[in-house]
Amino acid sequence: MIETKKGKYTEEENEQIIEAINKGLQEGKREREILKELSEQLKRGYAGIMSHVRKLRAEYPDRFHFSEEAGEGSNRLNSWEEEEEEIVIQTVNQFLEEGKSLSAAIAELEKKLFRTQGAIYQRIYTLRRKYPDKFTHLPAQRPRRRRKLQDWQIYRPAIRDLDEPYYPNPEGLSSAPTASDTLHPLHNQSFASGVTWPQGNEQPTTPEEEMLIKAFEERYGRPNPDTREKLIQLMRTYGCTRVSIALFTLAEDKAFPTVITEFLERRLQNHKFI
Image 1 (cartoon, rainbow, N blue to C red):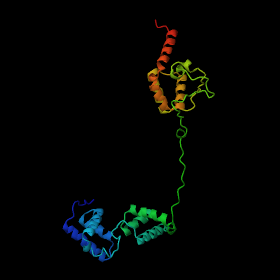
Image 2: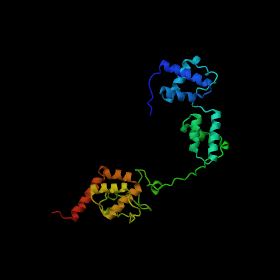
Image 3: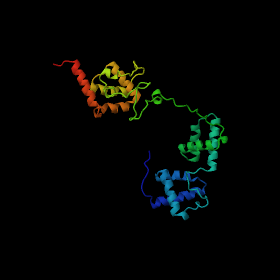
Image 4: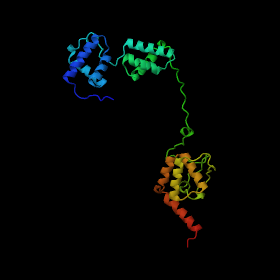
């Protein structure tokens, strides 16, 4: 790979550029072809040569003998002329009719037009949209497939207002649950106030649910199967985020000391430690 020069252009380089452009245009060469030859001779990048030529035309317009005769807009080397577009359409139609690939047509156009393959491909795409009748072969439109969502993306747990009371019994309860019903997850009898929990886990637990169960186990001990089912039901009713917040802020609830005291009293009555 040839290493290109960088830095300010010398006076000799400027003279060589102006002379080469005037001579090349007089001979009927395309300016892109001239700039490509200058890029190889001066060991400068093509984009740098193109930018410097624009600067020289602005500073020394009288030195370029063919700039005015070429017409306005001739300095825009990235613009596409009608003749170029016709060459693109004809070449693409010819190659595809002969059974050749579009990439082969683009490679041929790269040699004819002195443009990059990316620019040619983009122009083909634009021309196909603007003039579809001029192309004998158009790519078939791909059918848009509807994205299939997973069950977990469709069915999400309902998130209720924190201030809204919730009664798990579908028919409703005559009175709001007591503190021991809502905050005491350790004793099985605390959930026996008319609330029916489904037995058996129909769906496998998710990693997030397993993490919450593990956190519960680290704080309050390993739950029995019934308690585990109740925890899973809570997570799928209220959402894992809401359950995790409630779990880690239990001690902040005003009713929490009362629940602990009631549980302590029952434990002292049922077990003799002395």
